[in-house]
Image (tube, rainbow over all chains, first blue to last red; front, side, top):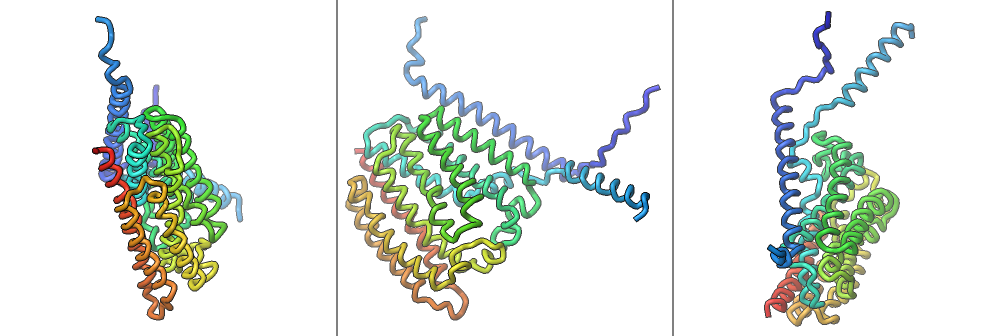
Length: 56
Length: 322
């Protein structure tokens, strides 16, 4: 018979800890979105008008 | 001590180790922002902006358009912030002992040392890589050198070992306009070095004025700032010497031709003001222990640098517009 999963690392996040963790996660997500947008804009501006010069 | 006692103690130590290892982060996003020393970042952004615009107006070479220029500026700001975070990581022990810095994120217990180190390293690598991609690798290399100089040469080596810490370490704070100049033109001219030397010569009297009224804090933390090692009188003399030396250095942009008449006149007047306040510090015996003269010079020095670079920026913008 399998024993129930009773692994306890002794850590209990308080509601405030959870809120802080959420805020950190949101900040990381926004940072990543910002980086994606930054690389996209950089690419477009690096290409310049040449971006439009392609055979159809 | 019985065997049972030793076992109990070992168990307790193991538990304590686990608790330290599994510490729940107390950090808020704003604590990471604070790690980047936003006050210093403001100066970095402003002086780099002046470097960027002056380079475009002076050399006629514009490798960056306004959007990529803004991204380059952002990278320089993040690079400056990264070196601030690495500085706070290494100096947490000193910050804990000083009133002025005890509430910084690491000594206050909101951010762990590991978090600060990881954040500083990630930001440093990201800022250098993105600057290299958006502008050129000379600028990226200079930014990497700036971060290294501040985080390693100044923070690890100089700050705790010599009273000349701020003189040599000032090079890190003086490099942002050079990085920006390289980003805009792909090279570094004598004009960029003129901007470098203005900040380089401005830094010692600015920080020694602060050190005069925060010397007890520095002494408590065992940091060999000049007033702690050589005394107030010697520091006051050094401030005056640097104020006098700064005046001709500050005229360099005008002499080299990339600062106009308005810059020349403004700088001459403001430099006289700087010397005037430095004489005030030199003469001040600080009998009431208020360090009023040093506080006045500290405030004036900030205004001085912003005014000098502000006029340079204005002149460069006008030259570009005409």
